[in-house]
Image (cartoon, rainbow, N blue to C red; front, side):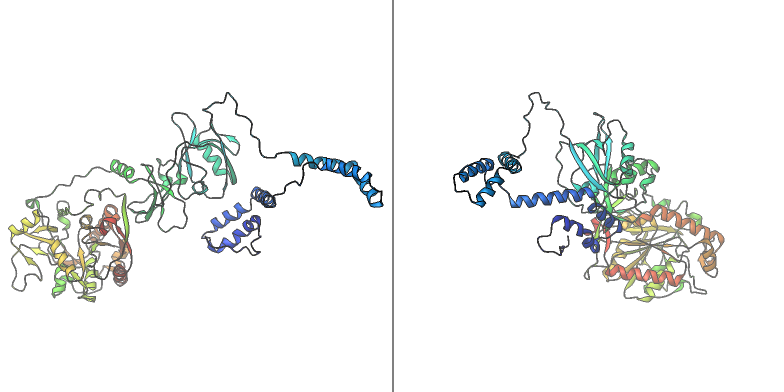
Amino acid sequence: MPALSTGSGSDTGLYELLAALPAQLQPHVDSQEDLTFLWDMFGEKSLHSLVKIHEKLHYYEKQNPMPILHGAAALADDLAEELQSKPLSSEIRELLKLLAKPSLKALLSVHDTVAQKNYDPVLPPMPDDIDEEEDSVKIIRLVKNREPLGATIKRDEHTGAIVVARIMRGGAADRSGLIHVGDELREVNGIPVDDKKPEEIIHILAQSQGAITFKIIPSVKEEMPVKEGKMFIRALFDYDPNEDKAIPCKEAGLAFRKGDVLQIMSQDDATWWQAKHEGDANPRAGLIPSKHFQERRFALRRPEVQVQPLKISNRKSYEEAVECEEIEEDAECAGHNSGSYLAGFRRSFRLSRKDKKTNKSMYECKKSDQYDTADIPTYEEVAKYRRQPNEKYRLVVLVGPVGVGLNELKRKLLISDTQHYGVTVPHTTRPRRSQESDGVEYIFISKHLFETDVQNNKFIEYGEYKNNYYGTSLDSVRSVLAKNKVCLLDVQPHTVKHLRTYEFKPFVIFIKPPSLDRLRETRKNAKIISSKDDKGTAKPFTEEDFHEMIKSAHVMESQYGHLFDKVIVNDDLATAYSELKTTFDRLETETFWVPVSWLHS
């Protein structure tokens, strides 16, 4: 708390200090709501009166006034008697006359009565027939502004009493330290609540402003000391408490969006956690569904999908060459570029449209610690991570529908700095052609070795085309990273979750198509590899291609969007490339939230 200047020395009273507090705290208060709360609280008349009384009592306590004697009236009588035996001067006559006045005699009598009386409180004796089960009652007065009190109530199933169900961390009730979980509520602002429903009591509280008086019976439970929450999670779904019928109090709920990082303040309740947005200056926590509770709800909403490992013999055809996606007019097809740094990028094993319903790529990475849980997106525990100069670069995974321009963006990145960016070289079982070199266009291996590597889970993705296998291996990714390059990997979206390991620390970028009208406008002179014939020739986009692209993007985002770290809409190629390049620069220098497991091997 900042140091406060009293402005009038050490003798400034508590009343003057409190009156000056709001003005002096104003530069340090983040929101107008908090400032209004301070003014209302310190402007409360009853608080002013209590502080003034406190100051008066404190002053007299410091003075500690004690009577000089307890019998002033008797002393006055003795003095008058002695003076009468003396020669009567004018001064003696005046003093005798004064001592004989009834008013002075009454004043001295009152003085003696006060001086002889003990004003310490005298407690009545304990009655003999006291009920040992009788509850002690506590009166609590809280100043409420527009913010909620930060407590929820419920009716006890056994006793029928209204009790405090939970205290929201950082809320008004929590900050006061006067109300605790399990306290029984008897009255609110003098209104008995024994016969009222919790909803009615909440309505009374919501309508109340300023000071609220509670009569409660304290809980006998001892509460553990509250510790500041140090756990952070990334939300993998959108949540609106106003649409949640299960939440015990909608007003206490915390809304969030997919991708938000939340700080967990309490996990005392197995069903409802308390959290706040990371970096939020407001200390008040809100209710969110716990991970276990949300997983159960998600599991009930969606049908269970059984994923079976596929046999090699069940493979259908894969496109050997990726579609040509130039948006710039008359751009050269990326697959026709030469050079070792471009060879790998033109083969990403995208599914032919005619075979997409039966084609599947298989990838099983047993090292992925999220293999079992990523299918139910709820929360992911995260921590801050910043790449150190001596570390390998993070793997960059690019995801997007066929025709969106993903490979053209990747090509522009590769050309921009061939020493900094790299791509994997695919494996294949087809014979090497005369103009090809092993390890440049492809890594050529036997069918037996390919199938052995598949069984040993060495491939990220693999497929079959014209009776030959093609695949991207884990070792090919490691090879690029070992050269101190940023590895650009283009994969199917369902593969992403298995790459999310401590070794690769992938950053996933989703390249999203613009609107249908913009696709018609920007792709009118572009071409795409056609899979409708066996030649794999480049043909102009059709209306069917545009609809398929948008539909595919929607499916990808709805099913795997929780795994995407960045979404870039490829409306204009130059703009999308600039945004992509900026993202890469930030990735290498700035701090990001990553899964906690990535920080420990």
